[in-house]
Image (tube, rainbow, N blue to C red):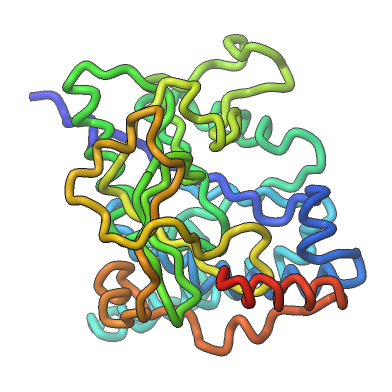
Length: 333
């Protein structure tokens, strides 16, 4: 009896963590003198949000590619690698102590147990190309999904399990697609939350039954990645909507673009299939409501970030302060 495709899917994640994108320079860390403080804060965000999500997944992620600037290796080792190793060691030590097994004498490498393998990519030129090359170096890759999620976002504890099941269901139904879009999720600043249906969701996954070899790439500088297309234009491509895999965009002062949305006050209908209609609204959101910690624990599988975490964000300029105050005044954060 053949193994179900859901069991053979290899899920990898690509995160644009600290690439020196022009927009980020202006709106996030502003200048190089503030970059280390910004990186340290983003590392703490990552530990308490996306990394915690990945550790709680019911279907593990094989690898997490963190795309960083070529000069960020020291920052990665100081503010990410060592803290993540400590988290992993402490967790495994506690688990082994409860089971009565011998304690480890040294730290174990990332990628063991329920912890996802962290694979940093340091580059200022074509970092996505290096992700593809790394995957090819691992050998033939069949039934591969490559997802993109921001480093400060959170996904439900069954996100990759549900995503895989939706892909398998669609394949068995004879559907053809290249991208999968997780359309349903939430926005929250940990004080309020808002349920949303996003017809142009940035929570995208690229699916391959067989990952293309290097000589199959259309051009040397455009290898296949999940960043091949803009999420704003995703409906121009072969797309499968996942209405079950859920996400949460975390809103905070140093968030570059996301915020609470307006324009929908009634609860979303139970049947969400209308989102596939090309004429459907790009985003529909219910009214904001109080953040529910008990709901979050059950949904995400871990404790929410520390309440004072957002207060640790570096505020690099007067312009940044004005921007944050304006977004709060408009109710976006």
